[in-house]
Structures are given as C-alpha cells and as structure tokens.
Length: 600
Image (cartoon, rainbow, N blue to C red):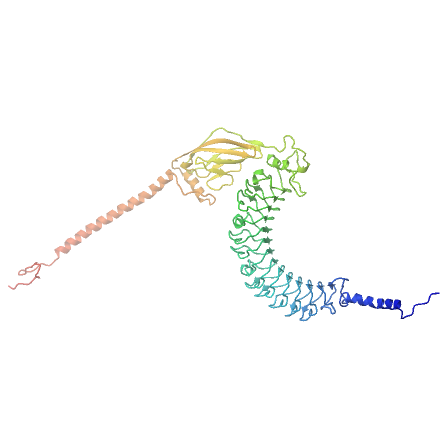
C-alpha cells in the first residue's frame, strides 16, 4: 500500500501554490478588479460601462485601460479629477449622456487620449480652455448638442486634432478666430446648423484641411473666394442646401480639389464658370438638382475628370460634345432622369468608358443608341440595365437580353419635309410674317432656319424671329432688310432635309389698322421690338405736327411786325419833343472845347 504524501512534500506544495495563484493571476492580468457595473474582457484593455444608467464615472477602473465606454448613461457634469488615474487612456466615449457642463481641467491628465466622443449631449457652448491637457487628441466629436456659438479660440489647445465633427447643433455664429490653433485639422463637418453664410474667415485658419463637409444648411449663396486659403483641400461636399440656386463665378477660386459634390440643392444649371478652373477635379456629383441640360463643350477645361454623376434630376438633353476633351472619362451616371437618348458624339471617346448608368430613363431605342448595343458586353451597367421604354417592338427588353440587333430595330428614318414647294410670302414693313416647314422622321427632326444674312435661327431662340415647335419661322415685326431667301433645315441622327422660302417686305401705305397693329406689338412687353413706324404713320405725324408749327410761326411774325411799328412811332415823338436852344446860343462841337454860352 503506497504511502500518502506528507502535507509538506513538494507535490502538495505545488498544488497549494497553484490554487493560491490562480485568482491572483486573473486579477493581475488586467491590473485591478473591474467595476461592478462594467464589463472588462479578459486579455483586453477595454472597459465597457455603456447603458448602465450611471450618474457618475465609476471607481476602480483599471489604470492601464486604453478604451473606456461610458455612452448612453445619465452623466450630467464632468468634474476635475474624474479621469485622473487613467494615464494611458487612448479613447473615451461619453456619447448620448446628459452632459451640460464640463469643468476646466477635466481632461487635464489624459495626455495620451486620441479620441474623445461627446456626441448627443446637452452642451450649449465650448468654454475656452476646456480641452486643455489633450496634446495628442486627433478625433473630437461634439455633434448633436445644443451649441449656439463657437467663440474665439474654442479649440486653441488642440494643435494635433485631425478630425472635428460639429454637426447637428444650433450654431448661429462662428467667430472669425474660432478655429485658430487647429493647425493640423484635416476633416471638418458642419451639419444641420442655423448659420446662413459660409464662415470664410473662420475657415481661413484651417490651412491643412483636406475634407470639408457642409450639410443641411440654409445658406443661399457661396460668395467669391469663399475657400481661397484652403490650398490642401481635396474633397468638398455641399449637401442639402435648398436655397442654393447658383454659384458665383469665383466662389471656388483658389481650390485644388479632386472631388466636388453639390447634391440635393436647387441648381438649375451646371455651374460651368465656378468649376472651370478646377483642373485637378476627378469626381463631380450634381445629383438631385433640377438640371435639365448638359451643354456641349463647356466641361473641356476639366481635363482630369473621370466620373460625372447627375442622378435623380430633370435631365432631358445631353448635347453633342458635352464631354469633349475628357480623355480620362470612364464613368457616367445619369439614372432616374428624363433622357430619351444618349448619342455617341457626346463623348470624347467611348473607348475609355467603363461604367454607364442609364436606367430609369424613358429611352427611345433607335439608331442613336446603337453604339451602346454594340458595346454592351464591354460596358458595366452595375446590374441596372437600360430599358427601351418607347419602342413598341422591344418595349421592356433590357440590352443584355438582346443577342443581336434584329432587322428594323435600332434604326432611324431620315427627315422629310412634307411640302417643299417654294414659298413666297409678301408682307408690309411692320407686319408679321410666317414661313412654314413641316417635317417628319424617326427620331423627330430638329428644325432650324438660316436667314438671308446667313444667321442660324434655332428653336428656343428669343427675339424678333422665333422658330415655333411645329418648325415654322415667325417674324414678329418685318423690316425691309429681312427680304430674301430663307432655308429650312430638318435634321436627326439619320440625316438632313432642306427647303427654301422667299420673303418680300414692302413699304406700306398709311392705314389705321397697321398703326393699331404696330401699337399693340410695341405695347406688349413680351415682344422685344425696335421702335419703328411705317411711312403712312410718319406722314400722319408730320401733318399733325407741321400745321400747328406754321400757325405758331405766323403769329410770331405778326407780333414782331406790330411791335416794330409801335417802336418806330415812339422814336419819332421823342425826337420832336427835344427842346431847342434859344437865340444867342451856339453849339460848339470842337474836339478840344465844350459848348459855351456867348453873351449878347
């Protein structure tokens, strides 16, 4: 029978020592015991005290903690010394509490802190010096508070801050020196604030800023040179400014950005002048703006542009050569618009095009879209295939389902002018003239006219000569110089057709109806016409004006005659009444003597 080991034997001592060291090892593994209402995962330096209904920072937090989560509690005030033992803390989350007051030097001991989150509290201001003692802080989130103003030097001690989130506050004013001291700031977000102008002076201190996001603001305009000192800015986002209708021509001057987003605003036109000098721009997003047309040859200065997004708008036309000169252009997203077609000549080269989004547009699948059918295997539609919505034979068919172009499909019918008989229209000067030009084709032709002076008159042109939607040319007020041959040109993707019309403008005789017609034209504010009258009206004006003039002249002559007669009679009586010298007086009229009286 084997002998039992003595209590003081080596084997017994090893087991007793092991049982004693197990709890000690567990505690030493994290430095100290974990607070009762928190969770401290083993082999981790994080402490989770979130959603515990805490009203103060719990004690006994291990001093070697690097992450402390106190979010979603009921903290009201942060006092000095609350975090005095947490020397190595790198991230502190105080989001979604009820913090309304932060005492000075509260964070003074957290010299290694890199991230501080105060989102969703009740702060109404950022007291000067509240962030003193955070030399290594790189991320600060104070969004969703009640902050009304940023005073001068609010962030002066955060020289290493890289990212600042200030969105969804009640901001009404940002002082010109509010951001002074943020020498290293690279990302700034201003969102859901009550500021009504771009804080240009405050932003001028952020010389290292790379990303600027301005969201949900009631700003009506971006002034010239608003961001001119932000030479390192690469990404500018303007989102949801409902009162922004246009950009001033120099509003983006001084920027070298590569990405520009102006979305959910009220732009009716692409801001060509404002973006013209952005030679480094690669990404442009103008989605959800009521833009109806992209004009041709207006983006040529954006030579590095690679992506253009304009989704969810009112885009109905992309003119030829709209992306001319954009040799690096590879992505176009114009989904959810009113486009009926997209011609190949819109692009500088379709060889570089990789991604094309045309879905949710009322596309007419004719010869203008044939180039897309031929390149459908090389184009990426991002799983949103364009659909023919106006062609009865292939309505609802996506391009990727078309194995080959069927006969009669994706073809166009050349324009044809219905009546090519030579028109001869005679009209008196000052009258209205109409030259008709009816055409048909598939797609519907675009009609323009060429005047005798070789001036092209397009549809939509305003002035004295207007091309109507039915192709007719209406001349509101004919002049003698308008006489001559006019040429109507109907064109579509399949070709053109032409016809000639002749207009003769004659000098009219005076008649009341013509005068009334001219008066009505001139009184209409919509007609921009020169103030001209016909010969009959001119004769009438002269007759009415000359008679009173001649009568006035005759009356003047009568008055002058009577006055001169009266003046002559008065002079005669004066001479007769001159007294005579008595006898014995002699008038001496010598040059050197005066008249003298000679004695008798």
